[in-house]
Image 1: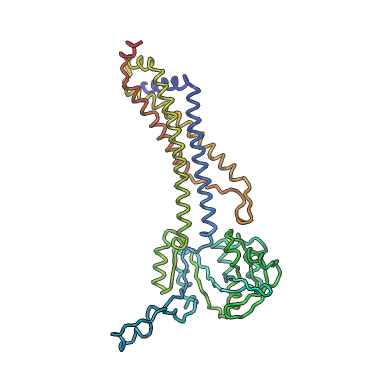
Image 2: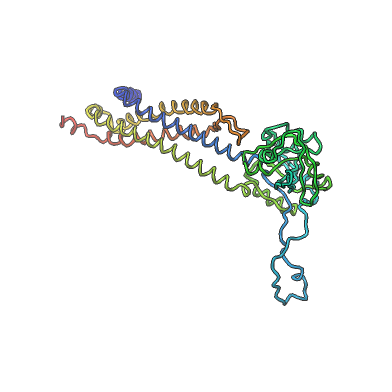
Length: 419
């Protein structure tokens, strides 16, 4: 019965100053709306920017690194152990970039339960021949089906059909920037020269655009068989094995394990793209900071309104305490008012935030540099809505607690005597 009476009094005080109550609720609503919208948009932007690189990057990349010899041959001779060797500029060992025993390695990776898929790759340094001019380029020999399944290759082919790379012998999909440099159209024949001086004619079957201009000016794609023919290598020739795993967070540990197990160089996605993770973290931190600041500002608004309400309702508080209400009851009355404002404003803020995100998501965003992006990116993560709900309740509770504490300590005798 007492709680019903407290609720009834809270309701009366709440509606007694309806305009101020609505202003406080609107402040909470606006704060939650902008909090949800800002975080959803910034998180979606982070996902989009990271996806331009991370979606095209293997979780673990296995390759054979060409590096300098650790020792000179003379260091291995016991006869000269006591001598000082002053020879410098140690040259790399006479090794190829080919991964030895690649078939057995891929078979072992396919049997690993942590691995989603494997995509072999060949990296070939070439020159695109444009008349008498040679343009530096890179042709990536790929397994078309696996590259598309694991790394969304077909989404970045903006001209032609990606499957033609597999079905058409001696074909190439040019980077958009490289195609513009050579003024090559789909169906044209282009000539490339390998690092050994061999010249090969290739048919252009499409254009590739990653969204990173410097990459699109250099890189192009061919099938693995075509890349092997260009380099004059056998069917077993592979320079990279791209591995995609179930849990990307396990990539560093798995890379070290594979490096030791297969006696080959391995790099994980976190190491290869540390700068992108840093940028995403900074943008997310800024978004949270701005959103939480908006909620705190709304909390101060509620605090000021309740403070003024207590000042204007001194007589009512004195009468309540004189008729048997304790300081704790008065405290509960004003906290109830604050929480009512917070909950009502917070719910509206969540709905308006979701609606505003939905509107932004349908706004066209077309740019030639980002062919896979058609609208503004939004991330509808339930976590943002939970955080917004918690902060709206916490900030409004604190905004009501301090004024209610002041009201609970009012001496009704002093107020009545003063009147």
